[in-house]
Image 1 (cartoon, rainbow, N blue to C red):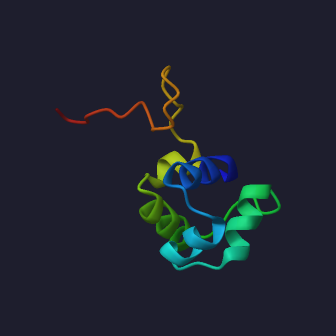
Image 2: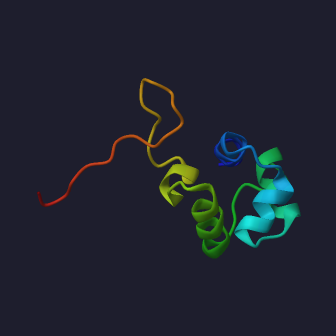
Length: 82
């Protein structure tokens, strides 16, 4: 999860502090997640990070594998009930 947060943050050109400001979370949480010192976090923080980064919570959690193009966007989305 930390690697995905870092990659999404870097795509936006943000520092950890800027992401913390945008997501309204403590800078230390982002640092700990990105370095692997913290392996998980509560849902509200994850939602805030995903919203600020413009990605899904599923992407941050690694629910979907990246597609062959390796563009960093979540892949594997399917329409259910269509």
